[in-house]
Amino acid sequence: MKKLLIVFLSCIMIGGGLIGCDKLQGKTSNVKNNANKNQQQQQQQSSTSQTKQESDSELFKDSMKEGKLALAEGEYYVARDMFKLALEEKSDDEASKLKEQCDMLCEIDDISSAYYFTTDEELTDDEIASAIKDCEKIVELCDKIMAIDSKSDAAKSEAKRLKEYYQVPDSYYESDSDSEEY
Image (cartoon, rainbow, N blue to C red):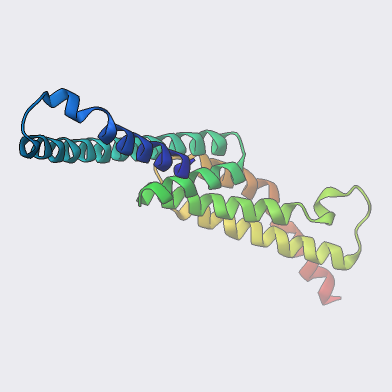
């Protein structure tokens, strides 16, 4: 998309410089024509530069908006890509924070797709131990997400929901330590 925009703007710059500048000047001396051409080219370049900056700004705003919508809909990978695109257009603290939160939400999504989270079959002791470790990792990631001070609460709300879902009850640890004493 960015390359297409640059090609498009380049075509405008080149095409605009070639469109009948001599016809606009009438039959004046070549020196005057060249001076006017240079002035017009500088104005077009300035205008094109401003248009490109406005376009970059629009791309940044659109990427941020789409990223926030995707995040609110639970589309972490899409949101992360949108925030990454926004950061390619402009360095921005909020976009950076939101991308970081999405990176962690994507990691949680990867962890939660493990076999033992998706099966209805009875788990072995090793699988249970792995699931507990992964739950603890997910809770840790959720805490990190909630600690990031971003203006948008979408990632924090999702992290809170996931933390509640994957939080291993204290009673599990209490019963586990009781059984080891015997």
